[in-house]
Every structure is written in C-alpha cells, then in structure tokens.
Image (cartoon, rainbow over all chains, first blue to last red; front, top):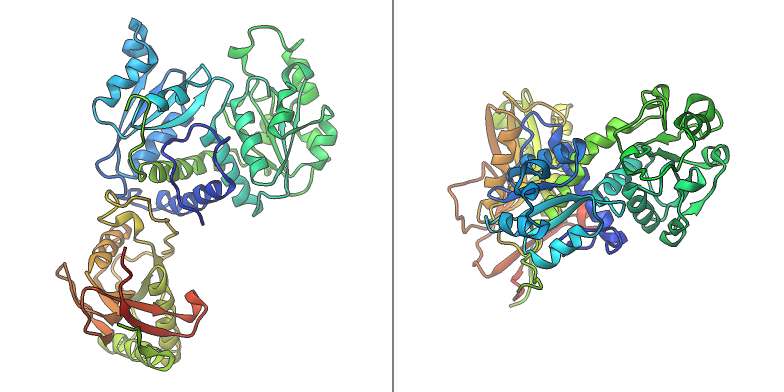
Amino acid sequence: MSEWTKHDLLDLQDVSRDEIELILQTAKSFKEVSARDVKKVPALRGKTVVMLFFENSTRTRSSFELAAKRLSADTINIAAGSSSVSKGESVLDTARNIEAMNVDAIIVRHSAGGVPQMLSRHLKASIINAGDGCRSHPTQALLDMFTIKEKLGRIEGLKVAIVGDIRHSRVARSNIKGLTTMGAEVTVCGPATLVPREVVSLGAKINYDIYDVIKKSDVIMPLRIQMERQEQKFLPSLREYAIRFGIDKTKLKEAKKNVIIMHPGPTNRGLELSAEVADGEYSVILDQVTNGVAVRMAILYLLLGTKEKPTEDG
Amino acid sequence: MTNSTIMDQETVQRAVTRIAHEILEKNRGIKDLCIIGIRTRGAVLAERINACIKQIEGNKAPLGILDITLYRDDLTTVDIQPIVRETLIKFDITGKKVVLVDDVLFTGRTIRSALDALIDFGRPSSIQLAVLVDRGHRELPIRADYVGKNIPTSVDQDVKVILKESDKKDDQVIVGERKKK
C-alpha cells in the first residue's frame, strides 16, 4: 500500500492506481464511522475547512460538510451569490482572504475549468476540487468507484457505460479517467451531438447503440441532461431523448442480471432515467450518496495530514 | 547489542491460555463479557484468547476489532497520515465488561486512544486490559489487569511481537536495539 503525499486533489489525471486504492481502502474504514451512534472521530480536531462554492450544489456541499464535521474539523460555507464575489472581487482575492484566516483546506466549485489548479498554485491550504466547469469532479468519480467496488467486488475488468450528456459532464471525464486507471473498460453512449471525440483520448470507447451498450455492461451510469449548460440546441426534443436514450425497464430487459444503475444526481426523472428504474432493484443511487461522505472523509483525512506545500507565491 | 528472543511459540501460547483463565476467574464466566482487540496484533491475540475461553467454557464471548488511528494524539505531528483500517464492533458494549487486548504495553498512549474510541461506542460497565508483554516506561496513568510477561527494558530498546496469523512466521517476542532514525 502506498503512502499519501499529495497536498491537493485537483484532478484524477495525476492520481495513480495505488493512490486510488488507498483512498478507497481508507473510505471503507470511514464508512463504519458514519454507521455509529456517535458519528464523530477526533482525527481532524482543530482543522478548518472552507467550502467555497461559486456554483449551486446540495449533495456535494452537504456531503463535504458532514465529512469534515464527522472528523471534528470546523467548517464554514461561502456561496458566491452572498459573498463579496458579487461585489466584484476576483476568485483569487476571495480565496487569499479566506486563507488569511488560517484555514487548512478549501473545497472549491466553479463554473470555469482550471480554477482549483490556479488556486493551488497560489495558496498553501489544501485545495479540493468539488467540480470545475465541464472538466473534472474527482470526488464524485472516487465515490462512484467505491460504490462499484462495494457492490460488484472489483473494478478491474468491468464494463462501465456512461450514457447521455457526455459533452458537458465533468463527472463523465473524471470517471473515464479514474475507471480506466483502475482497469475497467468504459464505453460512452448518447446522441452524437453530446458525445465529443475527445473522450477517446481519455481512454473511453464510443458506441451509439444503446441496446448493445446495455446488453454488455456491468454498470450503467445515465447522466443528467444539463439544461443550464445547453447554450445551443444539442437535442431536437427532450421527449425524443427520453425515448431513445432514457434508461427504462424495457431497455433493461436485455441487461445483465447483476447490473447496477448509478447516477451522480440530481436526476431528471422520466428523462435520462425512468422513475421505476431509479427506485428499482438495480439502482444504487442512494448508496452512492451514503458512500460520498465516507470517500470525502478519507480524502480530507489524507490531504490534511501531509506537510506544507511550496507555492509560487513562496 | 543483539536481538534476543524472550518468548517463543510455546510460551506465547501458555501466556494466552493463562490470561484466558484469569479473565474467566475474575469475571466469573463469560456473562456480559466481550473481548476487543486493538489492530493488528491485539486483534490476533483477542481471537486466541477467545478460542481458549471457548475450550474452557464451551462458549465464546462477542469479539470485536478496534482501530485506534483516528484517536491518536500525534496525528497533527506525523509527516504522513497513518493508514486507517476498519473498526469492527458488531454488538452494543453498553453495560458490558470489556476486555481490551493489545500486544505490547509501553507508554500507554495507544490504550488512552482505545479508551476514547470505546467510549464513543457506548458505556461499558467496566474496561479491563490484557497485554502479552508489559515493557514498562508508562507516560500515562494506565496499568494492565492481565499480563502475559513483564519484560524490563530500556527506552532505547524495541520489543517486537511476531504472531503467526499476522506475520506468517512462528510466534516470537524479540527484544532488540531500536533502529536509529
């Protein structure tokens, strides 16, 4: 088992297979903590964790907040709408001001790709990427991998299908990277307008035949159609999408017996996923949410234990 | 100074058997008793003690495994976070007589962490401590109720417990010089 030496979690590009294994194994230990009556351990007593969210979030933010609190860290929340960002302050200035209050970790979400990387170059605090634009969402991919391993016993050799709006999905990009690093085979499927060729360079295969994809897969992950990111029309109609690519009971007839259905949330029921399937026997969507807290506890624990990092600002 | 073997397979097993007898004598059987081993070698010893208890009483006590990493008092000073492993206590310890098991009792800091961890799981009626080796040099007011062997050591020495289940080698307790860092 390797040791954890990284100071930030920005992207899965630079996280090795051993390091992913370490996070998943550590998360397994932390899952037990959340199942106790007293859901708190003193590991990060005295540390301060700031959630700096320039984009809306329910699941990720509350998951990180619970994770930090269950490790006894103190947390504060800054939502861009109610902060001085709306008065014209730059992202870096906002972050520097927060860091000046001696915080140990900043969890950041921003609609522009690369913001976490930029902050990590200038700040001494640990930076955790909670989603940057369409680029990456490493903690979601890690909790997805944890859930797959928990449900199917392994990741290596599994066939994972990611279906839908790949173009705008940071979850898809991080999952392709992470899952292929762990030895899974990732196939993406969706309308051609929403499946960019670049996913091939990340290690995924493209298959436009949804029935064929469903038949072969051990894991099926429909993604939300991101209305807020459709600056131009990629789909003729949502109804057509639901009929052609929506995961429903009829399409799943051809699926493997022990297939699992995952979704990063929030779901548009009846669009990318039928309500029947979302609440059905194959669905592990709520397990993903439970596991999210454990995985984020593991990440906070590992990152906040490493030594101070050098920055460009010295 | 060279390494010297203080206990071998036979003496380790004898000590374990005697501790099992002492636990049963002191607690008058296994009613309300449970045994919790501290990872890694304490958990192995706890299992062995419980096997002896079964031989003597015909029944086992509930067995748990405790990982104390998250309760360590040096987490903020270590360079690299120690690996956290699972704690497995699948029963309620409230009102129970808990026997905590570890391999070596030294400064007492591990036991301090373990006591904190246990209290988060419930309110036992009592907590007792069983160790294979007591090597002295306590830094906290902690003592063991059951001791396999008292081994007088100097602070610079290292006491290593090797157990078949965890180390894939025959049981041994070795006292040697501590490796210079």
